[in-house]
Length: 442
View (spheres, rainbow, N blue to C red):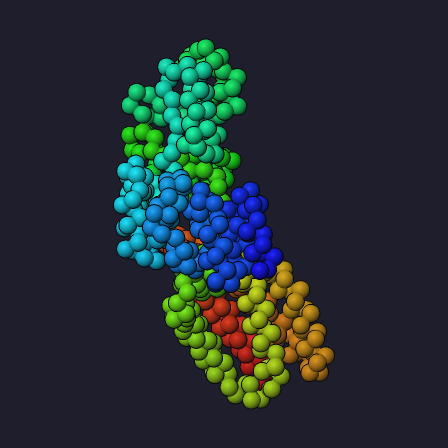
């Protein structure tokens, strides 16, 4: 038994966070993994399952009975219950149905309610467990009820008290710090009316795009956001821990898309599926590479006359590609964070073009001197220097314009941007370098 197994089998495991347990489990081999799952505390089983990468979920499910899985789901909050059941359906639909049938009616209703939303809608991420109080309740009674629910484990991550009217329409959101300084003998209505604080809550609709929710958390430094329907009735809440997960997923998606890789395919254990997804983008890249080669073919006579051009060509293309990628990455990330307003496009393009132009001039002088000394041909340095300026200038322009244009068209700026940019920098780089060489040197 190795150190990890000894650690898992010790009593310390009950004191660990589910993510810590998941990290320990990932270091075990297949047989030890199944054995270790048996001593994971029942109340943590569901949380640990969700902390593990998706590829472990199948082995995880096989280690427990239907009854044990049902208990694990019961211990989760409604949003996590839904995530667990959806993953279980993908692994084994029959087992998922059996587990669902063993759940309490209230849990079943919560899961069905959350599953009706699309994955990009706020409702799919909310917890239905939310404590609300009426305006005419006394603060003393509210705190008593709050405390009882917390002791029973009915509520977690409690930061706000949501106050509703008799129709469950959300009226106010009161932080616990404010609640504690209220007059306990008076009603919530009386305390709110006497206070100079503004308790109007920031809310979002259950059908709002989750990207908008993320922006609200960032803009207002929220810890929790109440989710309401079209009538203003509170349906649930989204907490900051869920937002961190969403932000991480979005960042991962962007990284994968910029590299021409599909996130869902890479998470899947099916090698064929992942290979197919990559092959699609490699095919597109092959086509663009052929386009660049056709440009080179137009100057076949020039290349045969001066071999030095073939040696220096990759430098021009490489510098343009890297400069363009820098601009592209900066703009895509700023768009994702909402740092670029609709009227900001010109400013963004102007900044990237000026930076690329400045770098183009600096490196044009540098490579121009190197090429002149290397091949003992002064005008060759002029040719590659001019080409460097042209290519880096176009790289900065297209590196910033392409994602902005895709965004305006309603397309994810990360999708296809790299392929388009590489094509432009290669074609412009080769055409400008070989074209100038043909005019100046021959």
